[in-house]
Length: 163
Image (cartoon, rainbow, N blue to C red; front, side, top):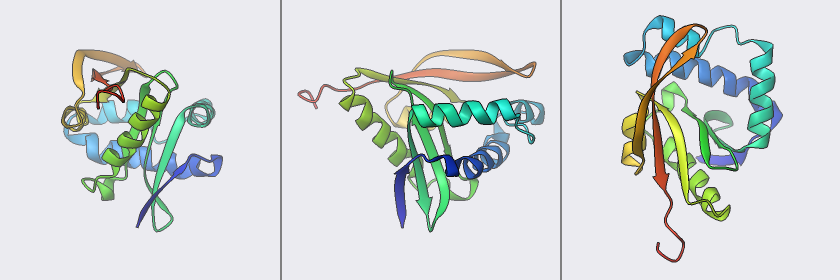
């Protein structure tokens, strides 16, 4: 049974492990080993841990659990930036990411936002396209001196009276 909770600080260690494993397995078809290491290094710096803890606390963050195991998480700023969306490598294709995005989009509507936007990996691009996100631009970001390509995407949120 899948259930969703808000982020709590004691989720952080498991979330960081899920992030590392997911990036290194799921994204390996679209990115080189050097890119994966730059994106999700094995030894995550303490400053990154502190930054993640702060932003996961501050953002609207959902954690998906199945039998007490974290199987996915996603977060969005109060301005509608969908910052992170990751599903455990062993739980891909089960609707977990869709459910998290649906929750975040509902929150965005409650906040009165007209759109939600993200920087999607090449791997995640088809998922976001299926969810109605439009490509704004392909861009290159740098992580630890390594270039990674991602896609800036946006989804207009229907007015409650329109939808």
